[in-house]
Image (cartoon, rainbow, N blue to C red):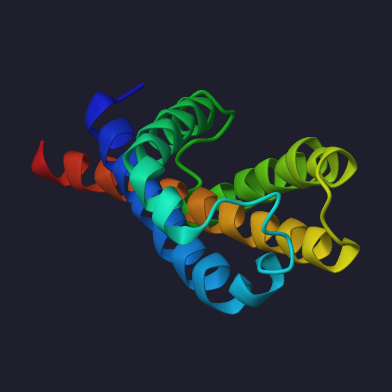
Length: 144
C-alpha cells in the first residue's frame, strides 16, 4: 500500500463525502427531516458536534481507503472505485439506513431517500478514492 496514494485519496474522499452530503442532506432533504424533531438534533446542536462528525467520518473513510487499497485491483481508476463505492453504498443502505428505519421513528419516504442518498454518496466517495489512488500512482511512475 502506497501511503501517499492512500492519504490523498482519504482526504479527497472526505471532501467528496461532505460536499455531496451538505448539498443533498442539508439542502434537498432538509424538509423531510423536519417532521421528526424528536429524532434529529436541531441545526445549532449539530454544528456543536460537527467537528466530532468530521473526525469520525474521516476515520471511516480511512478504513474505506484501506479496504480499497487492499482490494484486488486498486489501480482500476474510476470504474474500480465506482464498483467499490456501489458495494459500500449497498452495505450502508442495509446495515445503516434500514436498521435506523427499524429503530428510529422516521417515515418510509425519508428512509428511502436516505437509502438512495447513501448509495450515491458512497459511490461518489469510491470513485474519488479510485481516481486519486490511481492518478497518484500514475504521477509517481512519471516522476521516477
